[in-house]
Image (cartoon, rainbow, N blue to C red):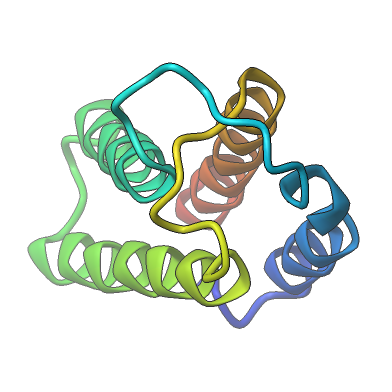
Length: 111
């Protein structure tokens, strides 16, 4: 559906190219880790997709949830070196925008 699409692969390549943003050792004052941020943002977007499309077949909803799990796993793999660190403000902004772009791929696939 999404994780095998050209758009998703291009986004993952963009993330890999942007890893320099995550090399900074600067610590953020927050308690939230990158793992928390990614998991929460993906879950919020997943809920929004389901709320925006109440007519979705339960099988399709399940497939979307599986793909969302795959997205989190892919992000964990790419960001493994910093996964348990608190994000800097720039990292948080990047990840929020990045995950929103992934939501757009899901929206497009559902339409």
